[in-house]
Length: 343
Image (tube, rainbow, N blue to C red):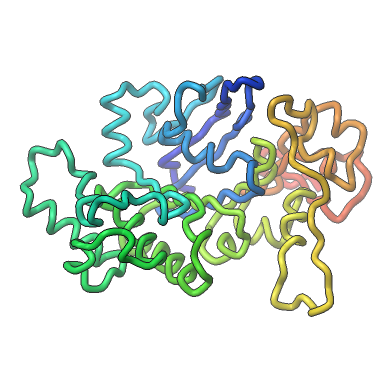
């Protein structure tokens, strides 16, 4: 198993508002390894985008603030970086592709100039070299007629082309990690497929690690190596794509699976949405955050937070249904203890 290039350890991030403190990210831990694509999946409001922005400290501070944890990039804690170190980290080590390319690009600037902004302040590179690098990266992300596109404004480009420009901006400094925050949400399925294919190609060519934030399980299945499932600001389950899809161990993950149509879904078959609403993060539940919406909820689920249970080196969940004294369900999986199977 490779050493992680990026590690989040027990990260707790909150926002102060007039209505109180919102506990947006609660004790989140996961690793990103060199060259892998890690998916973070969950409903809207589950904390996945806030978690992603915590990595680069893009959330406004204040009103946001870290209550605890570490974010280690190549062994250095991002939370302890000064302004100069943070600027270097953001400009050279990690890239971010935002959710909506329609609003993420500056409508008053030509796209070439927006790509070149990454080089602002670099005195060791000439104006001509900057342009050549911008054109090179535009070609890398599949933009045809790069010279023409370089001089155009965002409104002259299609949605898919704008998203390619956003990916080009993220790749300019050849970062080790790229965070993609729902990069295909506003695109049609044909363009979505092209963007996902592009990300796979870039991982293959450049060896870049990618964090894919999405609520679309189809996207997860297509490109991700490992997955973490978030709900109520917490991690519910993690594992390889196959383990999450075929060895599902948490009712929330199962609910996500059952709420989408499959190729073999009958025409008159109804989907099964997850009933209820997400928890109030002004006053998060004491026990499992999913307890109020879980059909298998027991008394202990409301009273105590479940401990993390491991099924393999990659697969784990936090759910009382995995306890040996819980009633038998289809979620029960053999536990792993100190590297050996107990059951």
